[in-house]
Amino acid sequence: MTQPSLYWNPSSRDWTAEATGAVVAVPAFAGELIIDPGAVAEASRDFGRIVSRRPRAVLRPRTVDDVAKAVEFCHDHRIPLAPQGTGHMTHGQRLVEAGLAIDVTALDTVHGQGPDEVDVDAGVLWSDLLTVLANAGRRFAGALTGYVTISVGGTLSAGGIGPDYKYGAQIDSVARIQIVTGRGEVKWASETEHPDLFDAALGGIGQVGVITRAVLKLAPVPTAVRSWVLPYTDSAAAFRAMREVNRRGALDELFCIIAPPGALAPTPTFLVHVGLHEYGAGSASEDLLDDLDPQGPVQEARLDYVAHVTRYSALMDQWRAEGWDERHKPWFDVWHNDAQIDGFVTETLGRMTAEDWSLPHGKGFVLLHPHRAGAFHRPRLRLPREHPDGLVWLFDVLNSSPADPEPGYAENMLVRNTNWLNAARAVGGVSYPIGSQRHTPDDWRHHYGDTWSDVVRAKMLYDPARILTPGPGINAAVS
Ligand SMILES: Cc1cc2nc3c(=O)[nH]c(=O)nc-3n(C[C@H](O)[C@H](O)[C@H](O)COP(=O)(O)OP(=O)(O)OC[C@H]3O[C@@H](n4cnc5c(N)ncnc54)[C@H](O)[C@@H]3O)c2cc1C
Image 1 (cartoon, rainbow, N blue to C red):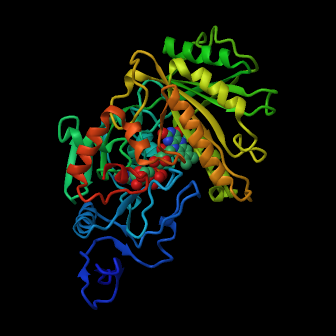
Image 2 (spheres, rainbow, N blue to C red; image 1 turned 180 degrees about the horizontal axis):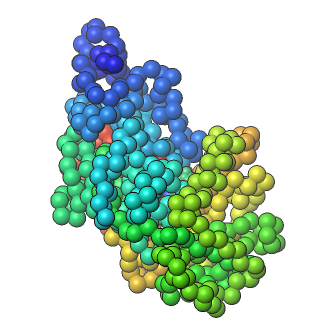
């Protein structure tokens, strides 16, 4: 089907099907440029359901050339634009008011796969890719997120943190990316080709271009994953156990879900999750849990690799079917260094209300992810890096509103997040900007700290018209 001709009207700053007046013809695309208001509704929101911004058009590209033509056109006419994955950041990061949304999920081809690398379009979902790789005896070599029904380009723009505590973020296991810069140029970037662009794009929240393709590092897939859940009612014992698992390094996965007071015990229960990748018979050693001293019955499971890494997607997809999508999700995510995490978590848990725990409906998580600081190498993902031999911890409060929240719920939660982030910063904490945080220009400058001049330099070079990805508010800080 041939796409009908569309035009850009520079005076009304809108797209039109009418070739009248001083309009400019929009390039022809192999994919679709959609201007129907009904069709742009989905592109106006994200999973947080707190912020809504309406683009004037959505491009569903079929090729990288489509993306390049669209970005160049937007650059020339100063039209704001935002790449969109599956929309799982929660505070408008992928939204653009009155501009162009590029639906990257329309690019979803796995181009080539060898034993060590796979070359995929940025719109491929991790959930699909995992299965393709496992069928070929491989897995992504780096960290997987807990929820995997999200796009490769989206998590590479965020960082990608999961239970694989030894490998840093997802972006630490990327060999190359193809990216369309804010000038509409198509470039490949890696540690050796355009390294400044590689640094600026990975974990860079869409600020220097649209990632269209990625070459990801691979490893052999385990035959199964054996996992255990160790409960602790005493936070000090839980932290001790997690530090011990990291020190020994024998287990492959480590993270913690904190259950609300009253669910399993009168105080919050730390459910420390550990996992072992098994490669053939006899690889599991029985003394792995020695001296971890859990304070309740240990649950154990052994699952096929894909079933293991998609288990939370299955749970959340069930919640989604039950209306979770429509609830507000004022998510809070912060990094701490090893010296500060126990105190911050204990204090924050002590102050948390039933709403912060997503009670009474229970559709939320409070999480802790310990990681080896020295495994993180990409500069746009900010975390406390003073102690490369130590641990850094991601603490997330991923709560959701009641189905019918009180007026002011979202605003109160945003104020809560500002207060919590200020308290975290006072002891060296750094935001992981996937959640619902109002970042002022000063907040962004503070966030990037001594790398701020690199952020500005990359913006000047790769997005000189400042059209890219206005949602997080970084453009306003650079201008
Ligand atoms: C249920 C759930 C669980 C999650 N679990 C984890 C977890 O365990 N660990 C973790 O680290 N994160 C987690 N996240 C957060 C998730 O990693 C990020 O929200 C990620 O950005 C999701 O990808 P997406 O495709 O939805 O991106 P979107 O939300 O669509 O986009 C995110 C940002 O990246 C930009 N962007 C998107 N695609 C591209 C592209 N191709 N090129 C350039 N910029 C682009 C967008 O403009 C936007 O600013 C979770 C989120 C949810 C909702």
